Length: 374
Image: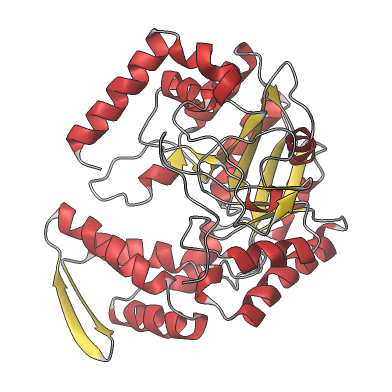
């Protein structure tokens, strides 16, 4: 997004807030409620190159958000309750469900004490290879290399490629380019490519991955909290669209099985790794249903409609941009006016409560279906 378009969008949202338009339209556009999605919660830190800044918030902002939700009279609910309300008639009050992706160590260090203080429910979606120290956080290794180096060389499509990245903007562009390239690879090819890069640039991906994630002792403490819902996010956190169907099905089923064995409880909620419309397909929705999950959460933006109009296995979530620290903007987003409404479609064979639905994302006026195979 250009600075001009960001300014225009921000101006429109400010106008919607101060004119009370967002609150006036909320009953029409807000649905039954929303599911908020966070990833990193950690203190502000300086740095010119921070490609994951959009996916992190400060502990102070999390505290302010929960206080604001209570002040605005939202019901902060579990994922079980969110699913119940998605299938029920509209209630007088709207709900918010708080969800956190990844199981990073900063969750137990910074986010969990705030959630405990406010005594609110939350869901944590976990890729089960990482607490064992077996996960491969290639995106963190890539960030470290690009941040440190001024020149990156690697083999792409059997050719040696060289990138000069002296300027910060060049670093951002290369990170985005390589992250998209790596995410689309098969697991074996991606492991070979990232380990080749790590060898070239002296990056210990195993140590980096272990240090960034909670271990099973941390997770046992969290899972004992009655406010905690533990969900699955596969085993190795691959983009499901990069896998063969049989491998995607195995990732979904094994992630559930490992989590159930570790926590001695049913794991009923799932989150698609990365979660955007390029990361999963229609067949993965069916796989999540067949695996026995009550819900499967995406990162596609939108509100949760009542009366079964939202497919629980393609559940929209509002992913908060950590660069935006305005509680006013949070309230405008929660009103639902920036999202197109869910509309029935005859082309979607997936049904919830007897009605076919089309999942929406983006800004008002744009409608996107559940991702299909290309």
